[in-house]
Length: 144
Image (cartoon, rainbow, N blue to C red; front, side, top):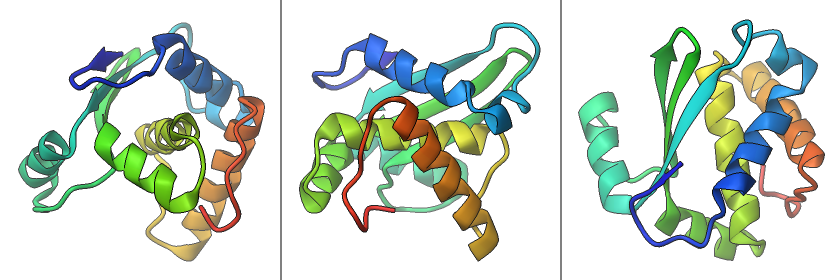
């Protein structure tokens, strides 16, 4: 994990959330054999906007972006700490809970899940909630 901005996030927290997510049978089935990695960059709104513009053609800030990797490296996640704080405040829960949500969401995207259709969204929400439960993270009603 790389912190490009000041964020009171222990790298062990992010590793733990991702490892527990990987233990879900549906997720484990999509992982490559052996050990795999995900790089996580905690940064700010400005960098997320730039990355979103450069790689997705969207000139807007977003909370998390996923960049596919290859082989044993599943890919990279870029997460805006400013947006984590704002969304945590909006939904009245802890910033680390919001960060966990975004880590899980990004990992699911790296493994091929999407939420363009209602059925896909329902499956992503189900997997996200199951993964967060493994990390004892509870989201307020209405967050997903």
